[in-house]
Length: 91
Image (cartoon, rainbow, N blue to C red; front, side):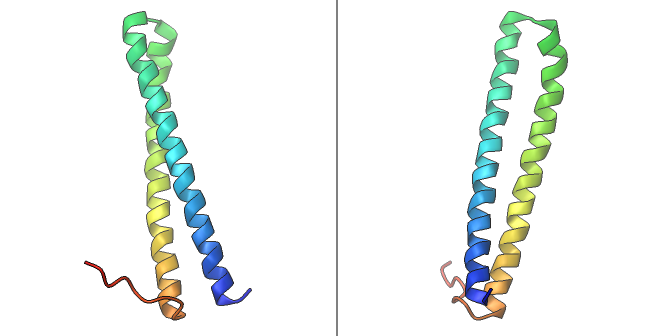
């Protein structure tokens, strides 16, 4: 695979990572909503288990965000090192 093909694949992976992060965030919001709804319901099982599920999902979202940021840096360095695109001069 040539460098342009590698960069294109890196871009595809970044889109997939971003989509996965967004999906995880959506799941996290739903878990939080269950926790809020259970305040009114008062179910002991949910009261005991949902905070742990929320904490694990929150950790997963943070890890995915960190991975996305790190891989973005890898992708940008690869593009710069191989002169595949101009660096972003906006700002």
